[in-house]
Amino acid sequence: QKEVEQDPGPLSVPEGAIVSLNCTYSNSAFQYFMWYRQYSRKGPELLMYTYSSGNKEDGRFTAQVDKSSKYISLFIRDSQPSDSATYLCAMDNYGQNFVFGPGTRLSVLP
Amino acid sequence: NAGVTQTPKFQVLKTGQSMTLQCAQDMNHEYMSWYRQDPGMGLRLIHYSVGAGITDQGEVPNGYNVSRSTTEDFPLRLLSAAPSQTSVYFCASKSSGGSFSGANVLTFGAGSRLTVL
Image (cartoon, rainbow over all chains, first blue to last red; front, top):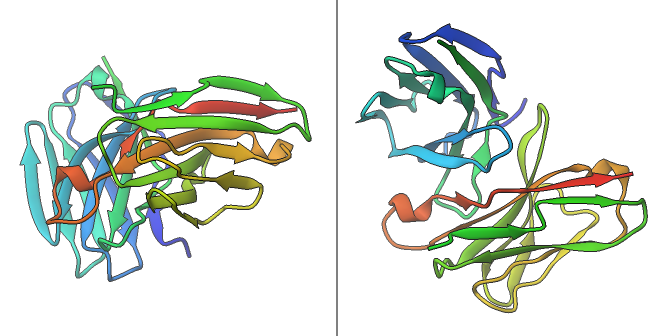
């Protein structure tokens, strides 16, 4: 079993839809959770980060962490074609090295 | 503020050739790392460094060498290129220590796309 699992997609949604992206993990020591967005042929860029369980909102994006279920989610409201990208979850136990999920490819159709 | 700069962006090698991928950051980050990204595999850590003069192996270090002589630079050397090293390589850096904040998350370069024939 991989340390971090993520549905690779691809996921296609119409513009304006609510998107839910998810990751599960096996290491209960993870405390810090990140979402990165990666456009085609670009490097990953940080979208959101959060610590421990709960929700964090930033504009149209909401990150949710449920440590008891070892499950994290990223919600995108009012999705736009510019949101079309690969979304990578990452987690860390505040050691030195992040562990990444394989990424979910999202297409938002106009 | 350039962030993390990687060169070259593209490279084609023949099996057995050696080369160096360059990475430089201007954020005074202590931690620097190299990842490779392959379809379906996600980002896998090759080598990392927590400061000048200190390096360590990640998940997939075989066939790669690194050194860290300055805070700013962290080159990745392919000793004898193999087709299995065809991949996209990303350098990333972050600040270490202190309370967790946006400074403690990885900042990535734009990537170096390597093909080994």
